[in-house]
Every structure is written in C-alpha cells, then in structure tokens.
Image (cartoon, rainbow over all chains, first blue to last red):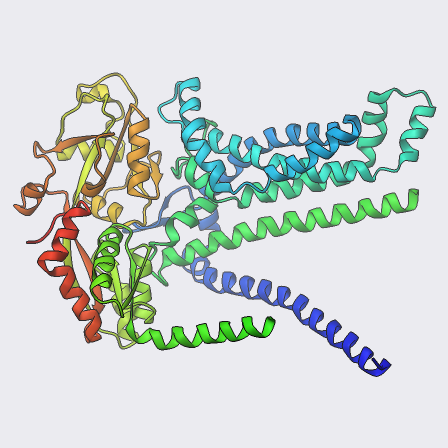
Length: 298
Length: 268
C-alpha cells in the first residue's frame, strides 16, 4: 500500500471518529433543548418559585396545583437514607479489597462487586416488594412497608458497588512509596490507612460518592416500585414519599399532550437534570484536582 | 458479510414499508389493553395477512398518538378532553368514539378485614382523609392505608369523578401505577383499602359492597352499581376499511366474549 492511501485511510478514520464523538454532544444538546423548550411553559404559567416552593402536587384536579417541593423532599429523604447505607458499605468494601485482601480474594471479590452493579434495577425493586417491604412493615409495625426507608435501603445496596469499585480504584492509585514511607516511620497498618492512604485517595473517594449520589437521584424503577408514591412532605423515614423520578415515570404516560401537567413534568425533569449535571461537574472537577496532586507528588 | 447484513437491513426496511398497508396500530389505556390484545390475536388468526400491533402507554398517550397520526385506534378509559379535541381540530382530525365495554370499579380490602359494606359517603371520607381509622367504621383499631392510582390514570380519574365528586385524595395515600400493583399491596397490607377494575378482582383481596350493592356484571349493566364507566376505542371519523372491520369485530358477539373473558362487562 502506498503512503498516500495509508494517509487517506488514517484521515478517514480520524474524521469518522470525530463525527461519532461529536454525535454524543449533539444528542446531549438535543435533550437539553427539548427539556428547556417543554419546561418553559410550565415555569411561565405557574411561576418558577411558586412551583418550587408550594407544597401541593395535585396536577389533574380542577384547579390544579403544581408544587414540586414534596417531590424534591421525597428525592432528598430517599437519597440521604441510601447514602447512609452505601457510603459505609462501599468504603468498607473498597478498603478491604485494596488494602487487606489477598491476591486470590481480590481476583474473586472485585468482579463480583461489579456484577452486583449490573443487576437491573427492576430486579432490586422486585426483591424489595417481595421481601423488604413486608419485613419493614413487620419490624417497624407501620401500616405499610412502602415508604422512604424501604426504597432508601434498596438504593443504598444498589449504589454501594459503584462507590466500592471507584474508591477501590483510587485507593489503588496511591503510590506504594507513600505507604512505605509511613511504614518506615513506624506506623502500623491501621495508622497508615487512616493517615496516609485514605487522605491521599480522598478526592477519588469523594468523586465516587458524588457519582453514586447521581445514580441514586436518577434511579426510577426502584422508587416507583417501593416508595409508596404519596406526594407529602415527609416527617419521618417511615412515611411514603414520591421522588421526582417516580412522579415523572408514573404520570407521563397518562398526561394529556401539551397540557400544563405535561409541561410541569418536563419542568421536574429539567430540575432533575440540573441537579445531576451539577453533581457530575463537581465530580469531574474534584477528580481532576486529584490527578494533578498525585502527579506532582510522584 | 457486512454487505449481507446491510442488504438484509435495507430489505427489512422496505418490507416494513410495504407491509404498512395491512397494519393496524392500537395504542392507549392499560385498562383496555387486555381486550385489545386478545381481540387482535383472535382477529389476526382469521386474517393472516393483517398485522395488528397493540401497545399500552395510557389513555393520554393513545389519544395523542391518534391525533398525531401514529396509531389507528386509541384505547381510552376516559372520554376525550377538550384540550385534546382542540389539538385534533388543529390538525384537521375528526375522531369518533366507540364504546366497547363497561368497567366497574371495585373497592377492595385485605381478606382479614371484617368490613363488608361502605356507603358512598364513607368511601369519600376514607379517601379524602376524614376517616383515618378502621375503628370509626366498626372495624379493628388500625390506621387506614388508602391505596390510590397515579393521578393521571384513567381509573383514578373515573374514581375521582364517580366516588369522590372531584374532591382531593388525601396526600398521604399510597399511589401505584397499575391495577395489579394496587391489588398486590392490598393483599399484602392488613389495613389497606384500594380500588381496581372489576377485571383485576381475585381471591387474594376482598371486594366491598358500595352502598349495599355488590359490583358484578348484572349490577353494572342494570345501572344499579354506580362506580362504573364505559371504555372506549377512538378512531378517525373516516376509518380505513380494515380498521372499521376490526372495530366491528370487537363490537360483535365474538368480540364481546373476549370482553367478558378479560373480566370486563360486555354491552350485549
């Protein structure tokens, strides 16, 4: 093959890849555009702050109420419960695999944890309905097991593998010389872990937690199946809630096209998107800082 | 190899375009779905050249699709709304409603619950939050768990109009996305009360009389039972001949047998 045609091939591949990578941006732009376009009528007609701060969600009544505060509160309660479970669980897994596990355990454990994160969410939801909801109802002696804590626990279990896997990676990136230096200064295993390894991997761990949070907030199926779906301001974890994602999923199918209800669901989607977008940006920023820090200290 | 796949793909695209002439798309209410699905199966066996695609999605989705021209028949468990009529008018579409069955909404409680009968006022008070404990109705001392449907579902809208006189459901009611999900929760929860379509009634839950009248085919058809509503299939005013034939089939004696099998109430 001549050099010329070789060059041409190289260029062709380069451009094809460029266009394909551009398409991701185009799709993203398209989604953002649609979200904004369909959400604006809701904000205009209801009023942005009235929508955000009012406590009644009665979209199909006459007159309707479009307060999404209870939906946001529902998302928040569920997310906090999930994080309370997934952070300790995920970090413990990560520390054990990266620092304490033997080679053979490592080979065995890591793929299994990653497998856990690939179980479809509807399967988790199903498990929650069949097993967890009745158990919670009995244990707490509450009228119904479909409440914030049930979906929070399932979401926590679901997102723990993400935190575990990413944190384990960042713990692994900590240079061996750091640990050796700590050992040389007389630290034991635990002290090295707490004072050297974890602080050095901190930004990576925080990134993993932020990404896990994004996953929890965006998860739909589990909350739709387990959180009960009552749009109230929750006063305890044992009350049913209606997180934003489940409201969209449950109502989009029946909302009449181009009505205020339809637009307001897009408004919820836009807010949800904004939250996860900010979280991702934050994660990106922190992980970048972390790379530079390690790079200069190597 | 790649070339072969491409040719196959292109061929598939073309055949689907040609096949479109003998295709009916039915979309909409999940309540009407079992009727449409079974009717389509039986009808396609008789007319092998015809392809009927049945999709759920909800009454709103079906009506939106027929207005946009992406389906031929829209299943709906509610009458079309003014807003949707306006949209149809803007697109120059005239729609026609065909009543295909009646649906009774049944109030259900857990089998362990001793309550047999509820008056319309009691039902209203339970679902709006005035009555909070089964004790107030002569039952056990349990906090009532009201289970409702998502506020956009056809069953919910019908229940709200027929039983609640458009009053607001108490905000702490659990909401579920399907009839089956409501039935499952009520079967699981001793203190629960919910409402479902007559077709979803099973022995895992207990049906409660409404104003002293049991929900049944007879009581609905004789207009004795008041928690009942018609189910529709919407088409364009000028139907394609194959659509008209299918609608006629659904309304025929054979179609009505399917309606009964699906647990709804046939008109004939």
